[in-house]
Image 1 (cartoon, rainbow, N blue to C red):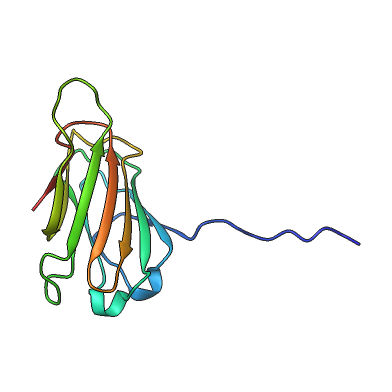
Image 2: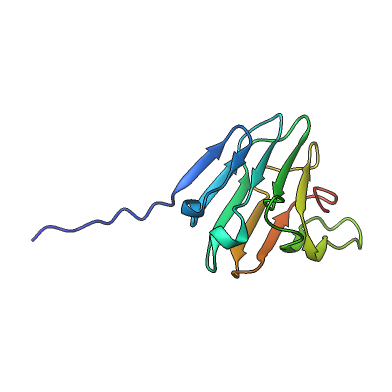
Amino acid sequence: MGRVFFDIRKNTHSLTADYQALASDSGKVFFLDAAAGLTLTLPAVADAQEGWNCRVYVSTNISSNTGVITEKTASDTDVLVTQINEIETDDTQEGPTSTGHTTITIANALDTIGDSFDIVCSGSKYFIRGEVALDGCATLA
């Protein structure tokens, strides 16, 4: 009997322009692949529902503008709960955290290919854990 192989590759999407994520995008890995920056808008929490998730990677250095991950502000207000680890060890500054905000801004010239953000919806909020290489790469508002 022959071997059976299963395709277990991740479902990925390379973003080169602003993108409104859909409820059907749950489980995707998004690559931020625009040197001019872009905005990734998460689905409304009511549409995403409990368990919706994605991972976001910086795959191209942002050389102008910024990268932004944001809630769908027409539906949600301050539903992002975020903790970001900064890998650098040059000072005592800690990574940004917030228990309720709207956006994560990824600064040009401070981003590093491989910076990443894991996003999971609880049904009422998005919980985000990020890891970036440099101080000041990600700011929360």
